[in-house]
Image 1 (cartoon, rainbow, N blue to C red):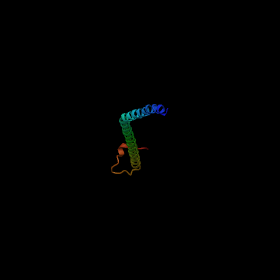
Image 2: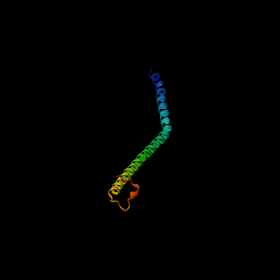
Image 3: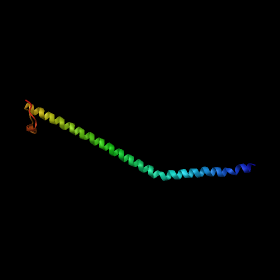
Image 4: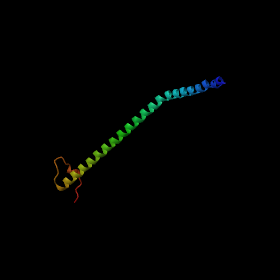
Length: 94
């Protein structure tokens, strides 16, 4: 009777082994795809961050040029223009 109970045991265990082997094969097959997509995500994020950084730099430069233009205009209106100031381009307020 014990022999009959042990006969189906290898068949049941082989199903587990086959399932595990099949799952491992799927994992091995999908690993390069997962790695490639992770690399693409990293590149996309890096490019996005680089774009944001460049945008911040451009805005800061634009703000700096605006401040300099307002200072130049004030100097020209007061009559304290520097030799590098272009006062003819600044509208005079009366």
